[in-house]
Length: 106
Image (cartoon, rainbow, N blue to C red):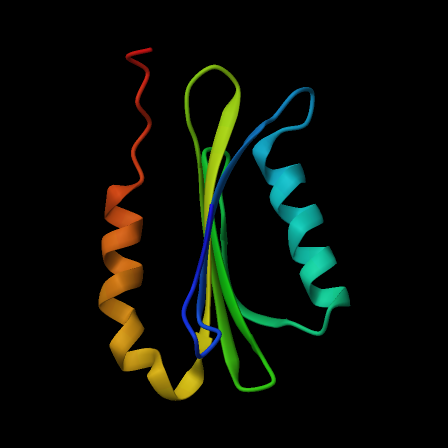
């Protein structure tokens, strides 16, 4: 699902099946692809069951969080927003992070 405001600030939420690849492999591939697009990541926390990374490109911040969920899947969210709106978006990022919990009830 993609949410975008008229100014171009973006929130993207998606999930994937991990298949044979582990979470770290998927995240590292995504980071490399983003870096090829010109993103410079200054913060990376990579773990077996979750990861978060952020960086900048052309005055924009990109923040990505991913967790493993049930049945070999992973849930992601990505936010792109202007560096000068960081103070506004910090609480939104925090709320998004706190909302990410695996639900194995299905």
